[in-house]
Amino acid sequence: MPTLPVQMKRYRFTLPKSVNTPAPLTERGIQGFVTYVTSWLVFLLYLIWAYIPHEYLHAIGITYLPSRWWAIIIPWGLLVVLFGGIGIYLWMNRRLVHPLSSINLICDATNPELDTLLRNDLSEADREYFESQQEKYAFIPDGSVMPPTLDLSLDWVNKQLYLQRPLSAVDS
Image 1 (cartoon, rainbow, N blue to C red):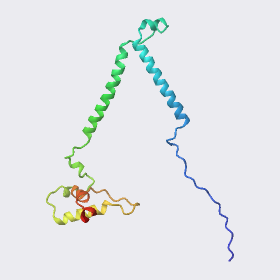
Image 2: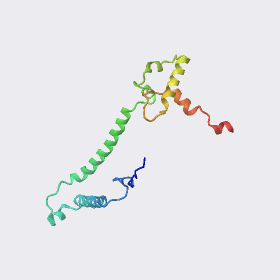
Image 3: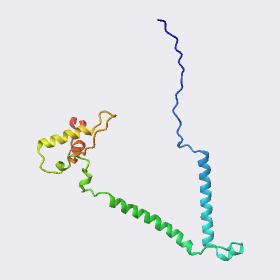
Image 4: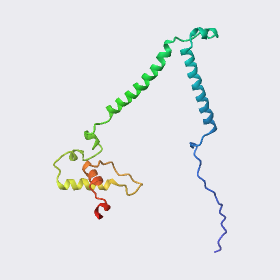
Protein backbone atom coordinates (compact mmCIF):
# COMPACT_ATOMS: atom_id res chain seq x y z
CA MET A 1 0.00 0.00 0.00
CA PRO A 2 1.58 3.26 -1.05
CA THR A 3 1.89 5.95 1.55
CA LEU A 4 0.27 9.25 0.88
CA PRO A 5 2.37 12.34 1.23
CA VAL A 6 1.33 14.13 4.38
CA GLN A 7 1.64 17.85 4.42
CA MET A 8 2.14 19.26 7.86
CA LYS A 9 2.01 22.90 8.63
CA ARG A 10 4.53 24.29 10.99
CA TYR A 11 3.05 26.39 13.70
CA ARG A 12 5.08 28.77 15.73
CA PHE A 13 3.97 28.68 19.33
CA THR A 14 4.65 31.67 21.50
CA LEU A 15 3.58 32.41 25.00
CA PRO A 16 1.06 35.23 25.34
CA LYS A 17 2.43 38.43 26.77
CA SER A 18 1.09 39.47 30.12
CA VAL A 19 -1.00 42.61 30.30
CA ASN A 20 0.19 43.32 33.82
CA THR A 21 3.84 43.80 33.00
CA PRO A 22 6.03 45.75 35.38
CA ALA A 23 7.18 47.91 32.48
CA PRO A 24 5.67 51.39 32.57
CA LEU A 25 2.89 52.05 30.11
CA THR A 26 2.18 55.48 28.63
CA GLU A 27 -1.30 55.62 30.18
CA ARG A 28 0.05 54.78 33.62
CA GLY A 29 2.75 57.41 33.30
CA ILE A 30 0.28 60.13 32.31
CA GLN A 31 -2.15 59.16 35.05
CA GLY A 32 0.62 59.13 37.66
CA PHE A 33 1.92 62.53 36.56
CA VAL A 34 -1.57 64.11 36.60
CA THR A 35 -2.25 62.64 40.05
CA TYR A 36 1.09 63.90 41.35
CA VAL A 37 0.61 67.45 40.03
CA THR A 38 -3.03 67.61 41.17
CA SER A 39 -2.21 66.47 44.70
CA TRP A 40 0.50 69.12 45.02
CA LEU A 41 -1.85 71.82 43.68
CA VAL A 42 -4.57 70.85 46.16
CA PHE A 43 -2.04 70.87 49.00
CA LEU A 44 -0.75 74.30 47.90
CA LEU A 45 -4.31 75.69 47.78
CA TYR A 46 -4.92 74.27 51.26
CA LEU A 47 -1.80 75.99 52.61
CA ILE A 48 -2.76 79.31 50.95
CA TRP A 49 -6.27 79.11 52.42
CA ALA A 50 -4.98 78.14 55.88
CA TYR A 51 -2.13 80.65 56.29
CA ILE A 52 -2.82 83.74 54.17
CA PRO A 53 -5.08 86.28 55.90
CA HIS A 54 -8.61 86.57 54.49
CA GLU A 55 -8.10 90.27 53.73
CA TYR A 56 -5.51 89.44 51.06
CA LEU A 57 -7.74 86.78 49.55
CA HIS A 58 -10.72 89.23 49.52
CA ALA A 59 -8.50 91.81 47.80
CA ILE A 60 -7.85 89.46 44.85
CA GLY A 61 -11.54 88.57 44.55
CA ILE A 62 -11.83 85.34 46.52
CA THR A 63 -14.68 86.05 48.91
CA TYR A 64 -16.33 82.71 49.61
CA LEU A 65 -14.06 80.72 51.89
CA PRO A 66 -14.78 78.02 54.44
CA SER A 67 -14.09 78.70 58.08
CA ARG A 68 -10.50 78.45 59.29
CA TRP A 69 -11.79 75.95 61.79
CA TRP A 70 -11.74 73.34 59.00
CA ALA A 71 -8.01 73.94 58.45
CA ILE A 72 -7.41 72.37 61.84
CA ILE A 73 -10.22 69.80 61.88
CA ILE A 74 -9.44 68.17 58.50
CA PRO A 75 -5.81 67.14 59.28
CA TRP A 76 -6.74 66.04 62.78
CA GLY A 77 -9.71 64.10 61.45
CA LEU A 78 -7.49 62.33 58.93
CA LEU A 79 -5.03 61.42 61.68
CA VAL A 80 -7.84 60.12 63.91
CA VAL A 81 -9.22 58.01 61.06
CA LEU A 82 -5.74 56.67 60.24
CA PHE A 83 -4.71 55.74 63.77
CA GLY A 84 -8.24 54.66 64.70
CA GLY A 85 -8.34 52.36 61.69
CA ILE A 86 -4.99 50.86 62.63
CA GLY A 87 -6.19 50.42 66.22
CA ILE A 88 -9.43 48.76 65.14
CA TYR A 89 -7.52 46.48 62.78
CA LEU A 90 -5.14 45.42 65.56
CA TRP A 91 -8.04 44.90 67.98
CA MET A 92 -9.94 42.76 65.47
CA ASN A 93 -6.82 40.71 64.76
CA ARG A 94 -6.26 40.11 68.46
CA ARG A 95 -9.93 39.29 68.97
CA LEU A 96 -10.22 36.80 66.11
CA VAL A 97 -6.92 34.94 66.51
CA HIS A 98 -6.86 32.07 69.00
CA PRO A 99 -4.27 32.25 71.80
CA LEU A 100 -1.28 29.93 71.52
CA SER A 101 -2.68 27.73 74.30
CA SER A 102 -5.94 27.11 72.40
CA ILE A 103 -6.80 23.54 71.41
CA ASN A 104 -8.16 24.93 68.12
CA LEU A 105 -4.61 25.50 66.92
CA ILE A 106 -3.81 21.80 67.28
CA CYS A 107 -6.92 20.11 65.90
CA ASP A 108 -10.39 21.08 64.74
CA ALA A 109 -13.76 19.57 63.87
CA THR A 110 -12.57 18.15 60.53
CA ASN A 111 -10.66 15.42 62.31
CA PRO A 112 -12.82 12.28 62.64
CA GLU A 113 -10.76 10.99 65.57
CA LEU A 114 -10.90 14.25 67.53
CA ASP A 115 -12.27 12.81 70.77
CA THR A 116 -9.69 10.00 70.76
CA LEU A 117 -6.82 12.36 70.03
CA LEU A 118 -7.67 14.55 72.99
CA ARG A 119 -7.40 11.65 75.44
CA ASN A 120 -4.13 11.25 77.29
CA ASP A 121 -4.47 7.50 77.89
CA LEU A 122 -3.81 6.28 74.35
CA SER A 123 -2.60 2.73 73.97
CA GLU A 124 0.46 1.94 71.90
CA ALA A 125 -1.73 0.45 69.15
CA ASP A 126 -3.77 3.67 68.94
CA ARG A 127 -0.59 5.73 68.75
CA GLU A 128 0.78 3.59 65.94
CA TYR A 129 -2.55 3.81 64.11
CA PHE A 130 -2.61 7.60 64.29
CA GLU A 131 1.02 7.86 63.21
CA SER A 132 0.36 5.58 60.25
CA GLN A 133 -2.66 7.69 59.28
CA GLN A 134 -0.57 10.85 59.54
CA GLU A 135 2.22 9.37 57.45
CA LYS A 136 -0.34 8.22 54.91
CA TYR A 137 -1.89 11.65 54.50
CA ALA A 138 1.21 13.78 55.04
CA PHE A 139 2.31 13.62 51.41
CA ILE A 140 0.30 13.58 48.20
CA PRO A 141 1.79 10.84 46.02
CA ASP A 142 -0.37 11.68 43.02
CA GLY A 143 -1.24 15.27 42.20
CA SER A 144 -4.61 14.33 40.73
CA VAL A 145 -6.26 13.31 44.00
CA MET A 146 -6.33 15.32 47.18
CA PRO A 147 -6.46 13.24 50.36
CA PRO A 148 -9.07 13.95 53.00
CA THR A 149 -8.29 16.54 55.64
CA LEU A 150 -6.60 15.11 58.70
CA ASP A 151 -4.91 16.97 61.51
CA LEU A 152 -1.37 16.08 62.38
CA SER A 153 -0.69 15.72 66.07
CA LEU A 154 1.79 18.15 67.52
CA ASP A 155 3.92 15.28 68.83
CA TRP A 156 4.27 13.78 65.36
CA VAL A 157 5.12 17.15 63.78
CA ASN A 158 7.77 17.83 66.42
CA LYS A 159 9.27 14.37 65.89
CA GLN A 160 9.43 14.94 62.14
CA LEU A 161 10.92 18.41 62.42
CA TYR A 162 13.23 18.26 65.41
CA LEU A 163 14.08 14.68 66.41
CA GLN A 164 15.62 13.47 63.17
CA ARG A 165 19.38 13.82 63.26
CA PRO A 166 20.98 15.23 60.11
CA LEU A 167 23.57 13.08 58.35
CA SER A 168 26.34 15.60 58.96
CA ALA A 169 25.83 15.32 62.73
CA VAL A 170 26.05 11.50 62.57
CA ASP A 171 29.25 11.52 60.53
CA SER A 172 31.15 13.97 62.70
